[in-house]
Image (cartoon, rainbow, N blue to C red):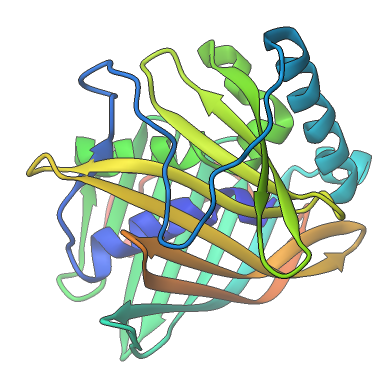
Length: 286
């Protein structure tokens, strides 16, 4: 689902467009257990549940979320093509939107194209590899390890990962955290996913509609500073039986840093493997 890779796009876009300091998941290196991420004004979840019931409750919420997002139709998706606008925020002020087209072939192939001001940028990931075309320099380069790690982290924190059960292959564990206030007369059910290396991510699903509302986790900058990251999903629309958010706001340390606004989404368009392969030269770029 498009929302599953929204964070991936944000991290990758940020790394290209304003060369931010590379961040790595907290505990991916240290192995320590991090505390649940919090943002300003957000209440912690409050529900005491026995360990076994805790897991059963989490599984129940995930089953409900799958149905809310389209059930069998959602699970049957193979590719997603989305077009929209990406906008950076600095000190609460939005910048100039950049148009993008994103091509996703589940589970782990993604190509994102940005065009604006006569310059194009293409960033493509295939599992543990990736390449970038920089239209300004007319060069194609391999992604560095930090950029590949960003994509893998984004996949870990994506809703497709938790709803499709890909996390099980990594030996991660789920747990029900409880309910969390989400506005006037609204609450979210919180499911926490914990990986073997200690990295955790929380998924908030609407208690009433079962739709993804937020994802929260923490990252660590190259300077060792721990930073809370949060995605908020809004304007859910049904497209061919699959419910997707058309607006995704990203917050870092409690401040909005970007917005993704989708304009169109298409499912199951054939995408050849060669479309994601690194071209031998700029002339061969499609």
